[in-house]
Length: 197
Image 1 (cartoon, rainbow, N blue to C red):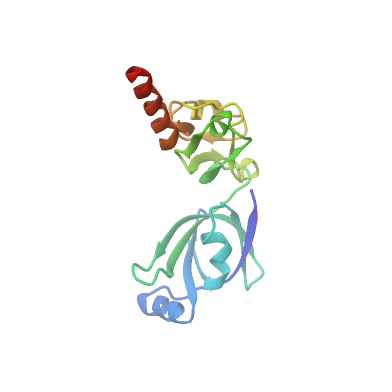
Image 2 (cartoon, rainbow, N blue to C red; image 1 turned 90 degrees about the vertical axis):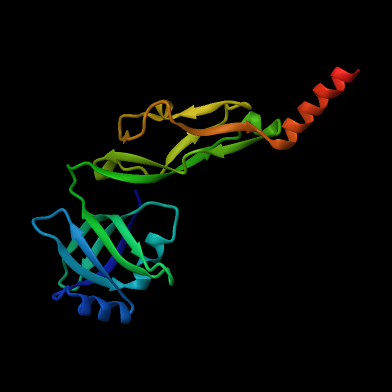
């Protein structure tokens, strides 16, 4: 999984006034969980642009002013209801031997014969929750659609592998090729014409 570096500084005071002052200065208050005790820090709002405003999932290296580095993953984010600015982010510390749960995007590869015949592809799930040790976390779950005809579906059970666990039931549809409205109408028109003939 791709990694991003975020440069931050530890927060000494974590009260409402201190948090408000941070936000006014264009910084985002953050908490890193998963160690002996939570670590409070802040980072410039611009540091999060490539982490938050992207469909991709990343691990994060939090680099603090004291020179310490902490590998983590974003767990939760809060936005301002009106301005959409980031209010707060929770991170969870990664350990090489400890499994974590992450939502990763679904990507398709190949060309489905059903699409060539006029069908449309529908990504039923845009993201899948997976669980693995950090080294085995995928950037995306890739679905091969090269054999899908109109009406065909790919289920979670077909995407299972040894590196990570997919935390969805086997019978959940991830991708399907449906008949397009135009193709459906053409089929209905042809049936109607055949009946009238």
